[in-house]
Each structure stands twice: as C-alpha cells, then as structure tokens.
Figure (spheres, rainbow, N blue to C red):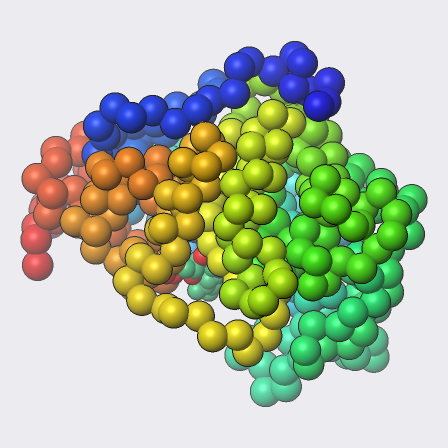
Length: 377
Ligand SMILES: Cc1cc2nc3c(=O)[nH]c(=O)nc-3n(C[C@H](O)[C@H](O)[C@H](O)COP(=O)(O)O)c2cc1C
C-alpha cells in the first residue's frame, strides 16, 4: 500500500504463546520490560500558550516510570498550535518544546521505562477550556482560543462550528505529523502513539458521523481511512524500521450509523500494513451524550475483537484497576499489553505493588525504596 510497507520488516501478528503481565515484549527494535503501560493523560499544565512541558510533567511522568511501568506514554501532544485540546496542552511543533522534553524522557529512560508520546490533533474539539476551569466549551479568541478545523463544518455538541479543511490542508497536516515525529525522536521519545480516538481529528475523518467530505478523504471507508494511513506511512518513513509505532482507536462511537469495531479491525490491518505495530483500543468521544455501558474492563472485548479480526497486536484500556484483572487480560490472549490511566494517578507504583500481588520478583524496584517492600495490602 505504501513505500514504507515495502521496506519495513514483515508486520507482527499476535502470538498465542502464554504470557503474563510482567513478561517482556518487543516491538520492532524496542524492548519493554513488561506489558503494563501508562496510558496518555492530559495534564493541561503546559506553560501558557506555548505547549512547553514544565516541572509538573517531569515529576508526574517521572514518578510513573519509577513506579515500574513498561512504558510511560505522555499526554496528547499536538503537532500544530491549533491542534491543542486546550491552550495549556503540550506540543511538539517547535525546538523549545523539544529541549524541554529532553530531561523528562531521559529520566523515564533512566528508570528502565520506555518514554512514549501521543501525537495528536484535536480538530473540532480543540481550543476548549481545561476541565477545572469555571467556564466550559470553546475558548473565545480574545481569551487565547482559536478557530478550529475538521473534516467538515459539523460542530461537536456545545462547541463552536469548525472550518472544513481543504484537501491541500489535509496534506499539510500529514506533514505536520511527520515533522512532529522527527521532533519526538530529537526529544528522546522511543515510542510514538498516534491519537486516532476519542473524537479528535484523525477519528473525525474515520467516522461517517463527522466526515461529510466528497474528496478523496471522504465517502467510503478507504477514503475516510486515507488521512490516518498517510500519517502512519509518513511517520514510519520518518522514524525508520526499528521504532515502535502505535495507533489509538475508539473502536465504536456508541452511536447508530457511526464508526464500529469491524471498521476498526479492518483499518487496523491496513494501518499495520502501512507501518503501525500495535493498536491501543479505547472507545467513544465522537458523539456527546451517548449511553456507554461502563464497567470493569468494559473495553477489553474491543481489543480482543480487533486482535482476532484484524490479526494485529492490541492494547486493552479502560477500568482495568487490579493486578489479577490486568494479568488475566494478557494471559488469556485478549490483548498483548494493558494500558492504565486513573489507577496510576491513585498509585504511581501500581506495577511494583501488582508484581508483589502476583508473586513476581522484579529486578527494577528502585534501590532507594527497598526498605519499604511492596506487599499485598
Ligand atoms: C486525566 C486524564 C487525561 C486523559 N488524557 C488523555 C489523552 O491525552 N489521550 C488519550 O488518548 N486519552 C486520555 N485519557 C484517557 C485515558 O488514556 C484512558 O483511556 C481512560 O482514562 C480509561 O482508562 P482508565 O480506566 O485506566 O483510566 C485521559 C484520562 C484521564 C483520566
């Protein structure tokens, strides 16, 4: 399908060999010490207006690496200023941002974890107030906001109407992802995840509910997937054959006529052929106010479906909160890795505690902390 696909090593397909949560995994040339990874989490704490990480990000991400995670994936980090969810989001569109990330990635690496970054563009869900602001919705221009862009001029409920991107502008954004991938490497990141989930720009192109285009980026599935596949191919060509590349999908819009798990499996297989290695399977975010059957591990079945149907490696995420629960996800072959978010906020040392609970001896408990052995509570 692409030049990258012709030069890349044969794509990985999932293995049926039994594994545990603390078994290592390798993607391309990158080894991970375990299969318990930190999912991206926006902190809305960049230095105002310029997307530069701060000491907050160093301590926040650093503590998660110290806590034993196999990879720490930094929050949605925008490839252009207009792609930020809020004015306080991080970016990788300039060299000052690259410089500021370097000590953060170096610390994560020093703790034996893989520093990853989620490259993103929020599209019609950009320029919003951060969650703890008194006001919600779109930030007006006179308060530091900007005009948003999207596949079509269709607003997300409660937000301003976006401007539809021209065909040329879509090509410009493929290039922005490519350049940001280069900057990610310069910043010390050893893994990139492309954010094609939660109703942000790449997802807006995938879903027929937000994509009403009639050019080569709209209409049938191949066209709606084209932007993502071009980004995957461009990033793969930029990062080389040894670098791990993930894509995060929302496997369903939870809405009639929307994007679904079969579309996800199909496009994941195409994205694998274009150069992506593993698919982090979430759901939702495109349509406001839909009913979602939230419960423990409620998205694992989607990771399993995409893994089986698409013959691709997957990560499961969403209300996975316990050691036995997380271990079962990989041991049963439903996904290849587990990503967790909120449990890591409650306990940055969750992996060290989970290993104790599962009776697994780790050789990466920080020596400084050995006088406080991690035990089952
Ligand atoms: C504070 C916070 C920020 C988040 N920011 C992002 C983000 O930047 N990118 C993303 O893909 N998901 C984001 N998420 C979603 C999480 O990555 C994860 O998919 C979700 O919280 C479900 O996992 P959990 O039940 O383990 O928390 C965020 C979640 C939280 C709680």
